[in-house]
Image 1 (cartoon, rainbow, N blue to C red):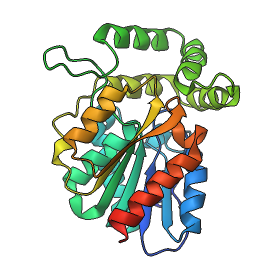
Image 2 (cartoon, one colour):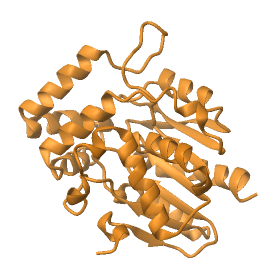
Image 3 (cartoon, one colour):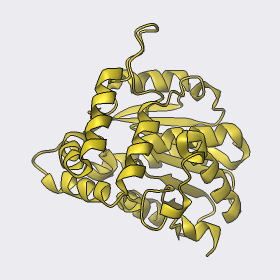
Image 4 (cartoon, rainbow, N blue to C red):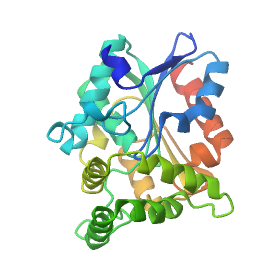
Length: 271
């Protein structure tokens, strides 16, 4: 099997500029379908892929040592792009995939023309010493991870509605629950532990390409303060709030996310 095929790579469109999408924890590349279709219609070439360990297909790619930090996932992204022989791409990452893009761009800047981070966070745990607000205390994270390890199925069924929000649209939480339960529980626990204990505040300021930071108006996983801090430290070219509930605005409010990404690409990448 070709290296890219192991990541479930899907390439759509034939435009001169390539946009690569990275999906966040517990979601599938199909979460980007509405955004991808819109960009393909506008003449972009679009690449989606799945992270190591996130699905049955990519399960063999997960290595406990390599992926105990987000740098391992960033190395995967770089190797994937090199195998596809693409560079100068615009990368769009949701949640943790946004920071994965940051680390990959820092290591191999020639591969990237721009970064878009949707509901991304450099650090999820509050830091009283610096006044940084990540949204969770260390104790809250420990409690969440303990519940996850104790009974993964029960945890997933409770966690998904909280993060997806939009109680009037229960299918959003149901789909996220199904996606979580499709992951092998020990790997899901290990990856979320890595995510919640990651701290890349020192890395985000090193990005040299144009950057867009998009944040949902009411995100239970990433507070506005964390998103604003991220945009400030990255000297984001574009920072805007998407009028959406929950951690998945590309699913719950795709039209607004589409418009924001298209405007950014048109003005700062293809101009």
